[in-house]
Length: 241
Image (cartoon, rainbow, N blue to C red):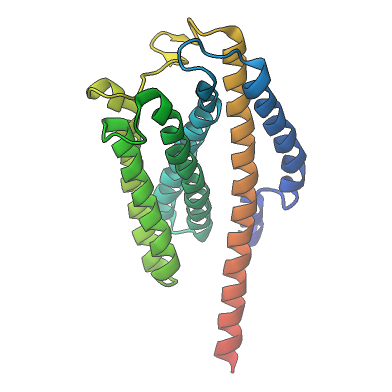
């Protein structure tokens, strides 16, 4: 098998996004309906608790995206293959979108419950640090120039950013914090003590958000590869002049 055939086999089908668009759209509409109408109103927090069905799936998707950056960065440093750098770039950009959603929906939920938009507790602060790391990652991509050196720097930065994920996850256990602990995935059980309709709604939200992430990642990866091919073609033309 040739190198080009191997690279092509490692890429998602060019038309995968055409399937993901209607599937993700239906899933998002189902999750939206369930969060607004199917799930009951929480007794203590009221309707503002419904943000939970968007906030938590966005946070889980952020974990997946930055985990993918970590794996792709490791593979790039090991193999020095451009396709891993492309995947890390796309996953970092899409992951930062979901990290931004987490940082926006969290304060909207926190204001009526805590009485303040923001507190410098362990989970909120470590999440903000993660967001800043990957904003720096994207700025390095945009302004650091082209070439393998920038790709290596970004790979190292992506790995450093991933180290913050377990800090975020265990921050509610390690430090005193206003942020609530695990509700759905508790030690030794999943969804114990949570009403079935709420559990179904959060599962729908997670599935829908993962499908949206898959769609965004597929499109962003496709765009990244087209951009790199266009830059390479431009460089070849300039060298021939």
